[in-house]
Length: 232
Image (cartoon, rainbow, N blue to C red; front, side):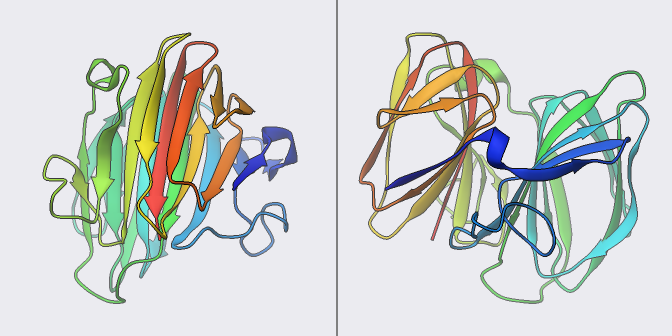
């Protein structure tokens, strides 16, 4: 089953400095019809005005993946970590027993990011942070694992969740498949262009919540960039 979540039906708001769309309903945010998908319970499509960002704030017991689509994000946290995450790069943060961080977007252009939150396998643990680049050329026509809670994904950023995040780029007319293990679920967003997923059409920034599908067949109707999270 593929549940199509059109971008026009996502809840969100324009706060001036932040334009936010919520693929999942959490608290007072998002469309109440858009329930969590297993361990995945937040996927925010955020646009930051130049020079703005999120002031210091705390997290605990959550795995956060930040995918930068445009601009860059400057990160600073209570562990002493600092970094700049450019478009195409990925950041992960395991909040564990607690961490405080701030993130500021590019000073001279808008910044667009996906913020993805997952429940960890277990509560607690030392908080940690990491980032690395993932060149789009390496993802051309195929999925690359960006972040993973599985030891076999040795080249991916490490998260403490029963999940993996993957990215791919497709030129118009290209296609690829992704095999789903029994009992697993997936959420898929095309950052741009148009695609079909098992013949279900998706426009740019639409979401697709996937359950009980053995294989995903993805076809690009225009040049596109895809982010997928596979979870339980």
